[in-house]
Length: 265
Image (cartoon, rainbow, N blue to C red; front, side, top):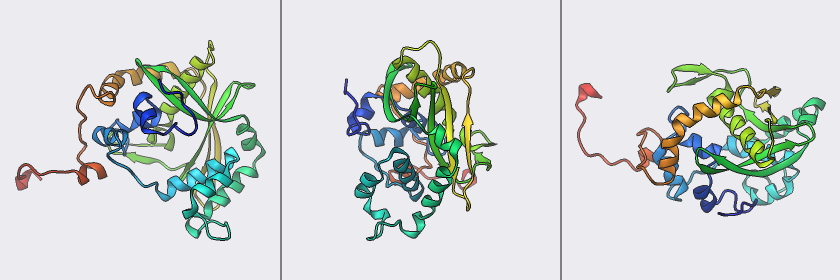
């Protein structure tokens, strides 16, 4: 089994040996980006996605929170002008950071060990995670999030309902899995308290610290176990992946095998 480090954490080998929350969700059709065929292609190195502007902005803010802005600037020069300032379309990220820095409570929640790699076993396979902030003294962990608008509801086409940003992006799954992995690795009898510290992209930005409690975690893990068998089998190559037919990967690799009757279109 591969020993995980910062350097190999996102490698093809790591993603083929360890399940992660992002990989697990990428197989599930009830998330806008979920497609089994695309997920397998990404794991196998057959499909790559360029990071979006939103992802790059989030990575910039995370690098600040970790105290690693210098290395981020060196590795992501496309975000920065020659004088070291951000290009205009990313400049709002600095205002989002200032929003966090100006709030004593939010800064307190972000105190602790940064980006600790944790591993464990769930649903019969090894899992990996990187925890943004892990505070053993207070038995808490915190994930730093950015979102378009904290109070906005997002329409989930699969569920046919509006959801808050936590449910829409599956952050409840992340909190439950991280809590379980920390419990296993720390050999605890109880869960650390999950938190999300979130800042949004409005001008001026809004912010919040959200705590989850722990009494729901076991129920969420049992809920995930229902779908985990197929996800794990497809991830491990034991079953063929289904194509969603709608995502960029499916459109790019689509082959027509028959005509469609116009009334069925």
